[in-house]
Length: 78
Image (cartoon, rainbow, N blue to C red; front, side):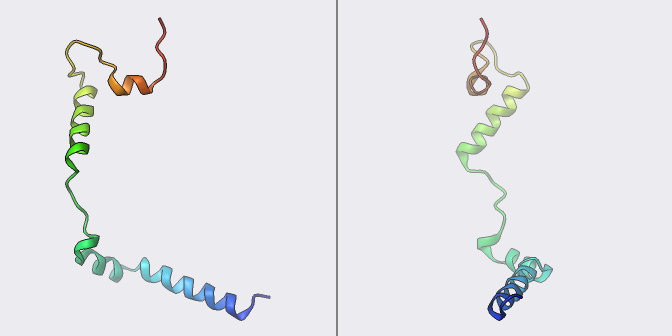
């Protein structure tokens, strides 16, 4: 049989979980600046994403096309 303290902790945990997942709480958090989704990427990450898009389209002309992505795939056969 669970002790009264354990049951109270379980009940408290359940209440907190329900509140965190409620629509009202989500709406409230979205209204707070700290919880808003930032739709822009930091400059360095945006630059890397552009390079990745360019590489995926085969846009690299000349030179070693493997770059960091090629190095990550493992050793090349000779």
